[in-house]
Length: 412
Image (cartoon, rainbow, N blue to C red):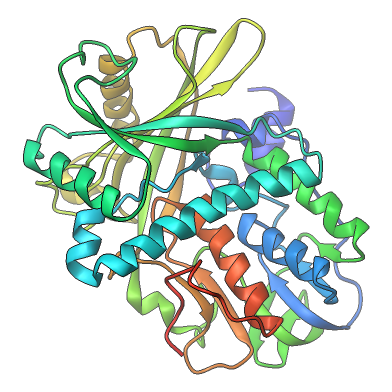
């Protein structure tokens, strides 16, 4: 590990190991606060949720200040695998049974709209973030039943998604006769390159970003940031999980630790795609941990295969008698079974996923508050969920009512 990697590991990421995104992107930093501030909107959190919200509000004419405890993307956004998908990690047939057919249509439309929004922003700002439209493939975990794949296919059809039931799983070793549901028009990108483009746009639009800016004492009047008073008409807490005792949603979700490995494969050996299994139906964990895989451009000769999974409730890895270090080994063995062309592992990192108790995330006004907004409960769809949240909160602050495009708004 060279000195630059050691610097990144110790100073700009929330975990012990450096992700591919952080390793391949210059540090995105701004000034520290040095005075009291008055603004229209204070956004706390410099990941995709906070930056997208800031960008959209600035475009709408609002005065915006964004503060980030570390550096831009140093939290969970920099530790994602950056799938952009409307194939939700909670099955559509389960959501239909729980919430009804209209809700699953709104959920599907919402996540599809989020992918479109990311693509549109990237084009409008000319961000070189390797955005690609790809297919996604959902296949059965060994503990799951064939009938559930049929149920999921029919539910996605009801939800209005473009899906196909295939007789084999494309590109996976020895899976020519294992069925899968194919989701068309999904996407992927380099998330920190995208954030760099958003950050540049925020500054050009007249917004202000502070990094190494720790927010505390969040109230309806604003927050303390590095000891300075930041006052605002609206406060958006976009920190993956609410960071203040007055923000109540922590009681409605649980934190899970998820693991990621990445290794090179010769370019052209695999199509750029997304793959997921349906999750361990026998797991002790509510989230039924699943595996998720994608490809990313690496250089002229190689692509990078990125695989994640082996989740457990945060701080409770030992309850399954599987040490955290062993989970990387299990993930590598699983990945090599399906992708035998995988070279030596180049990256290992982990992230934290917030799993909502009712399977649908939360974005909008914090319960009981008129001017404090939160985006949380992203589950396994953080990139699209946070973008939906930014769209909802921007509309709410601007007094625009959503017209059925977006769902999963907090109850007020």
